[in-house]
Length: 299
Image (cartoon, rainbow, N blue to C red; front, side):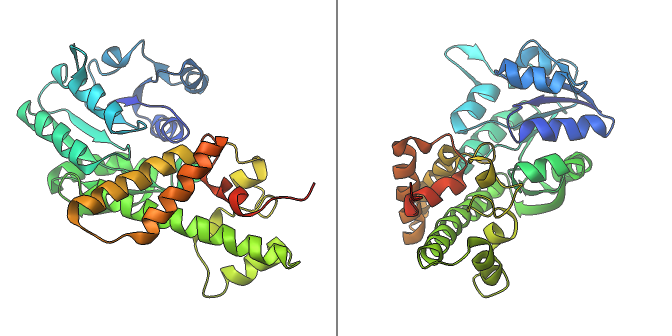
């Protein structure tokens, strides 16, 4: 299948590469030359721009940072046309970005008017899951459009959930990431408290992992440096899922909670914590670096 993949960051790059390895004909593009050069070194064809990327393809997959980027890509900005003006009827567009559900619906409506099928399919599983092809997809789509996308999603992920109509995938994702932000902050606090009392962080992590406090952070993404060699915490919090991206997702959750009048006090507190962490200069670090707010290593 001929596929355009736009957005080659920490998540998008490995996802596009997995499709390439599965035998699909990929045209890739990112505004970052470094990202383009990296995937080109793996044999993926890189297009000159987004417009050239989608020429002659059957499917477009996007993995972008925020709502404004997705809207600009598909609908255009500042008088410049978006990709929808180029895509022929029958094209399938799969947006894997984490954005506002309202933006997904807006783009989907515009796509439908042109005969283009648009689905939102945000992911969970981190960079490790993107590399391994074990991501979880939360999909908002018509059932028939999901079935068209499923063979491709299966090459990038291990779990595919149909959350509902377009936009539902984004709603599920912000619920998940709100919980993730809360549990990472709580896990960091618990570890810092134990270490302050002289406990070994690795031993405490294992105790909590096998007890009622067990969670995904303790299983796969420990925030304490050195406990899990493969986690960003053991790499000075480089790579992974950035603090500013978590802050963006927590903001989306709070905007949605306000719109539907849902009570999310812990989500609001988590957003404030990550905002303070970002303002302190840690926005580019992995979100598990929130540990630094509650633990100050001795000199």
